[in-house]
Image 1: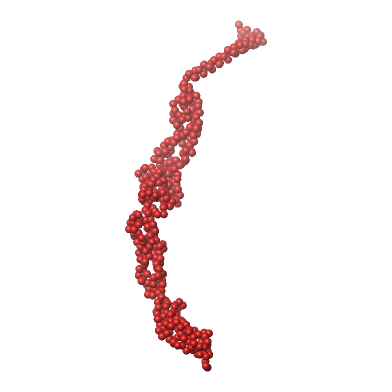
Image 2 (image 1 turned 120 degrees about the vertical axis):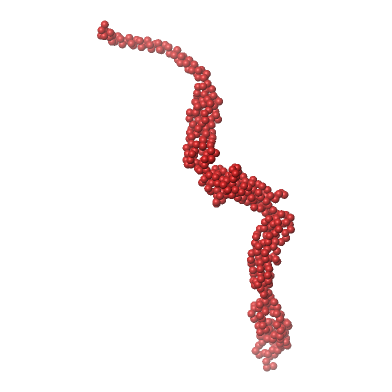
Length: 447
């Protein structure tokens, strides 16, 4: 048969046969829909049973707020570096997404994971990006860690030895106690930390409250005291990045302070013995003063009770003609542990002496007599005693003294007038005539 003979004789008839075939197939599918739905459900059920029965099959699980730990800090310091960030604030808790074996799904918790940062991988100073790693956990596979990295700031780590420990005294001791200079143990320490911070440390300050001392029979004790590193200006350097240790490497958070105290009281100075020598001619020492007038002395109780006076090396007033002030060293007192001052100022006051000198047979003059009167004295001469400054009295001559009776306002007749004296060359002096009054007889001229 030819190819032309194999073709359908009527295309329209052939097309109708296909349609009939498709319709029949559709009826078959429609008729089996219920059975197919049931088959799908049965398959799902069988799959679920299969999954549930296989503990090794994974299921995804998310763990929030997983704590991150830090490792390798000591190794990092050994290599000469340190992280200057606050790691507790810088490193957040992370979120972990993992495939967990179905059999361990309820058993694997956030605490099963140990995410960490390994600082031993840091190789140089500066800003560093470090990965957060999670060690393997049985029955779980980590798919994602968020965040997976952190940025750290790293500085050079240095140590400086023989930093002095200074004990600072705070508070007030009891008034009757003197506190000896405290001694720290150790006297020096080693400070380690970031180089910019360690370079600022010049001392370690340990503060001791004096107000806590005394009150019992003890006179000394050892106290463990906290300390604070300080810079040259006395500012506290309280960074947790600073590590203080003894010079043999033992980490310290306190130092021991040995302190002793003694009873004290004010001891007056012995003023008479505070000067030596003789003032200049005509001068005398009238007072000795000291600034202060006494010194505080601390000593064992028995020795303190025996002290009544404190002595100084005397100042020399030889030839002095006025007030002399000079420092004087306080003499050492047996068993004294403390004397409040090594020197005091001694002031010696010298004044010119006042002396008396008697002058004899000096004429008595009359003053205030009217021109029309004449006068006669029953005693024309007498003596007088002059008292005044040494050098003036010593040089005084008879001619420098005038004795007189003042008759001003007296009428003619006989009167008693006081004998007065005037001495040249001085404003301050006293006098005592041998006779206090003299009889004067006043006569009117022409009678």
